[in-house]
Image 1 (tube, rainbow, N blue to C red):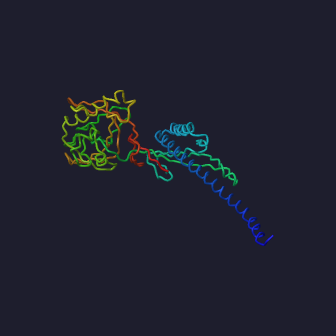
Image 2: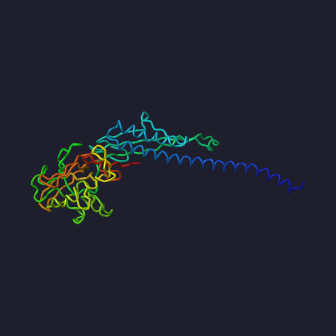
Image 3: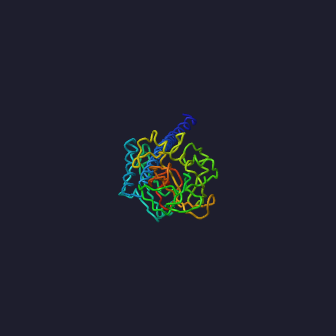
Length: 348
């Protein structure tokens, strides 16, 4: 046997174990890649479920008794439709659902005011490794949380009318919303309860009051927030606001539209959020001045369901019921006073 043959046999003896080692490393890398992918999917699922559960519970606040089962209902609903490998867990008994109330500090958010609440939902998903077991790794548990704060609305596009913030508005009780010389602020010269559009464009007053056929730019331009100062729109004749709210030849007044689909069967106790009878009005403090110079500070916002309007003979009236209403996706102010108009903000 030649020296070259000896050398070839020696090389083969070294290469075979080396190839085996490389194969083990490659298989381990593939195994970890697969299992890491499963962990990434599990993380997304748990976050989605935590988000949905926290939002469901957040809308039910401040009633903790209702908020907790609402959150768990979303978790269980996910498990009913999810594959067996992606069944999540959430246990109130183990601290997976936490609450904060007025004047408490919410982690990663900050202090709550006297009319704000928060809920945090934590969801877990155990993941069993498929290939990682080759390396002695059995699996891992992925946990994700979401916190939702329910707070008074801090700013919205408004119906350009004002009502006195000092009035004790009772939920469900019929209120007179027309501020002309009372019943809440008396003898404001030239003010009949209307506001100049925040954009300063008086030509769109009718459209704002109707809340119909507004462009996104018009909505944005007439957005107001708490502590804004607005001026009066004085001397508005009854015939003008009748066309916006009560009845109009074009059929676009709020009460006209509310008679059509899909709102024909709506009542105060059961109405759709798009019903034209719903108006969002700033609760204001009269600061002084007269006519177009009368100034009003916005302290909060209220939602009202218009029950009836009398625009045909004195005493004129706009009668609405104060409601609790949730506006998703708008700005909130956790330190604002409670007004019945709510939003929920998500904190990751």
